Image 1: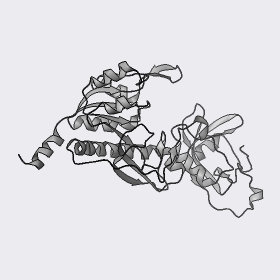
Image 2 (image 1 turned 180 degrees about the horizontal axis):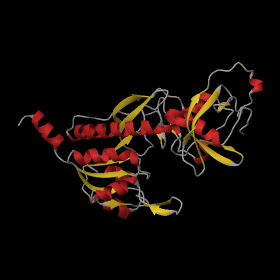
Image 3 (image 1 turned 180 degrees about the vertical axis):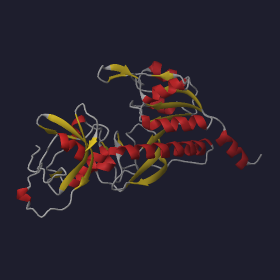
Image 4 (image 1 turned 90 degrees about the vertical axis):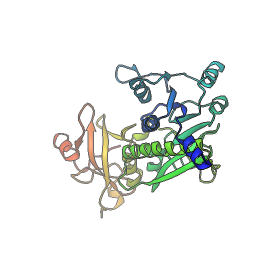
Length: 324
């Protein structure tokens, strides 16, 4: 058997992996790794958290998937203890695959697998390191984003890069659409990168610090519409922040969610006649700090989502109404 044949056989050989993730974004990657024949020795995910109206403990999306597929699950609250690190080492891993896990990996964890810890990150690193890269790219008006597969180090998304692939962001791209596109792309990329790393034909390249930005975690109140902002920024927020934390405004003490919006048509009225937050027509177009925003799909508290014209038939918001 020549060297090329040996390399191909090594790349095709099943690997023993730990999968470390919590969010739905990671599920296509786990499914792809299993379909490729790799063995998952353990799934590490966040412990159950109280959620919903009853605040009952809920399993993470990854925990539910693992349970349905008979995979062993571990839910440590920290990986910093000697016992947890010894338990991790005892798995005899070829690699750990990490995607939106939520716990810091200390150096003993990073060093334990033979091939190290490989991460799927939803941005064009070094742009948008951190917790919310999909939403921050949309909010910033970026015209593209993508997926990076990196070798993890102790920094925050600062590891060396194996591969980066870009996808466009259009004027209508939503966070939900981008999430699904990047999740599928990351799954394909990880299977390919893992095969290349295992065969010794793919090496990570140091990540540049130039152009680095940080994708701060989303906060619940970020979804409140500030009408003094430009309409273009508010329209991006509607696409970026649904379904969570959601985009909303208040009227008569009620919080109304905005599920879809569009930039309004230009107006000939002077800016002084249109203070931000003023309804300017019968289509629920709102004056903003710059331009206007037409609200296209809304949801009142406890009600189903509906197009704006349907909502206005039972909840009039005539021109001149002012939102604060």
